[in-house]
Image (cartoon, rainbow, N blue to C red; front, side):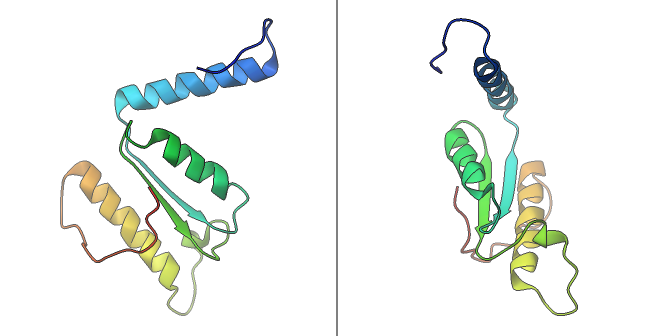
Amino acid sequence: SLNRSSGSSSSSRDADGREAVLARLIQAQVRLWMCIGAAESLAGETLDLAQCLRGKLPVEAWLHEGAFHVWMLFNASRPFASREAAMRNLANFTRRALGTGYVDSAPNQHLYA
């Protein structure tokens, strides 16, 4: 529970909103897959959210060193190992979440949550 001051401050409304969204996610057991580049400004917040949700709902967070914003969508003329690994991880997460299809069990070294 968050510490709230009396009155209707913006920060307490924000906290109430965050708690409501988290409660709905946990109740629905929404499966979350998050992939972030280490150079992203929100990398820390993404990993904090994953840690907060750990044990409460299925969540995976992938941190890719040296990756930039939306690098997974970057179309390179040469193989882009981090992109390929991220796309494979997303496909595997989707297959596991749906309970269908083959899951690539190759070891991945970037799983953080």
